[in-house]
Amino acid sequence: MSPTAFRERGYRFFVFSREERRLHVHVTSGDGEAKFWLKPAIQLANNHGYGPRQLAEIEALSREHHHELFRAWHNTSAVAVTHIPSHGVWLLAHGLELFVPYTQHPWFKDQPVKAILNAKEPSPGHYHGPEIDIDLSQDILEHPEQYPNIARR
Image 1 (cartoon, rainbow, N blue to C red):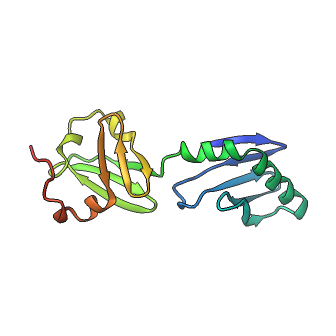
Image 2 (spheres, rainbow, N blue to C red):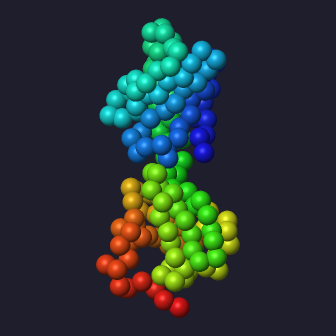
Image 3 (tube, rainbow, N blue to C red):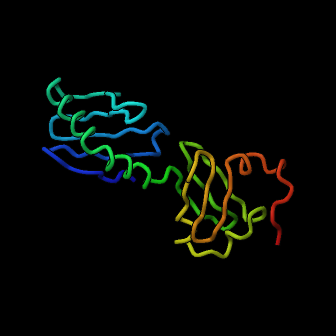
């Protein structure tokens, strides 16, 4: 998912947080596309087709609308449910596939699909299902043998 943060002067500014963790914005128009880092400072990451004047204009617009860009970034989850087979849930987080088996996490099994799909990543490697009030970590999913207090039915 890549929601549009705003459009101005023929440019579309959008975020795509699943690409990488560092905050950035993508900008497209009929003339080209570019990517700007938002932190630690607004800075050109790559450019395809824009000239110096357009890049300066895009950078100025990014500075002017930095609150909207940060809001759009933080409203986009970096974790997604990609598949719900009969034996668990598959998550995709920053290019890493993680499996949540019902045998170790049974509270997911009888949940509505809508609740499972609403996965969030409030902090790196920490996954939260707000509708079912479940918190998991990447470490728990990758090394379940280290967490013997997993719920059982």
